[in-house]
Image (cartoon, rainbow, N blue to C red):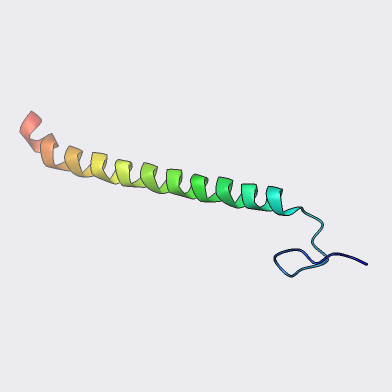
Length: 55
């Protein structure tokens, strides 16, 4: 008899630990991408504000 995983999908052969680890890695990656986009937007905004003063 096949044991049902915590997610309720008996056909899922992935163990719970690696599934949770994958979700953590995906979440961390999305957070890093978001931070990079925010930093890029701040950089562009500061450049647009300060560029006319450099002349």
